[in-house]
Image (cartoon, rainbow, N blue to C red; front, side):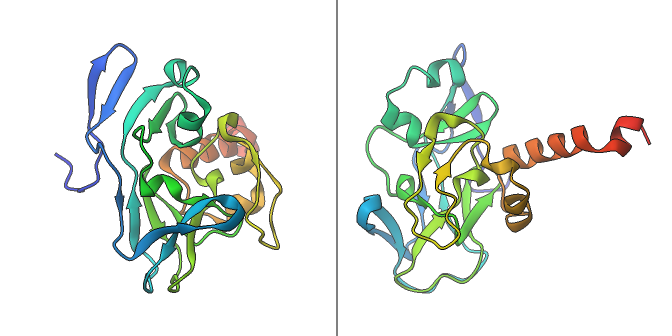
Length: 197
């Protein structure tokens, strides 16, 4: 048995449908929901959060792509891709952990597939955010970014994880799923790998 308090155990419910053993999300007591201007609501630090602190663990139910594609847009856009054909869905009602906004200059990154971890010290009053390229490789949540950062990419897509500058900036902060895709892509374009050397 895994010793992690946030480990996901998959229990079959019916064909192509799974449920996570973490039915609801965890969010640190050092953050709360607040207005995020034109982005709607977001999560903001209520005290200093040191680098390396787990600020959230995403929970909910896991569904296969076939079922996922039939869901309403709100459910799809409030999800986390955890494998090529598997998505972690938030419960029907708003959970604070589902209000972490995207930023092109994030202060949080992904740990494993479901943890959100502070990449650096986060100051009181600062919005907690992550770059959705760290976890998603599907265009179900393509959108025009409103992070307002100087290096904003504008259009956010499911292929952003392939950008070399993001792979460099977020090394160690991608989900296990995206990290695996990056390794596969690198091996596919590595001439040494192709020659079997």
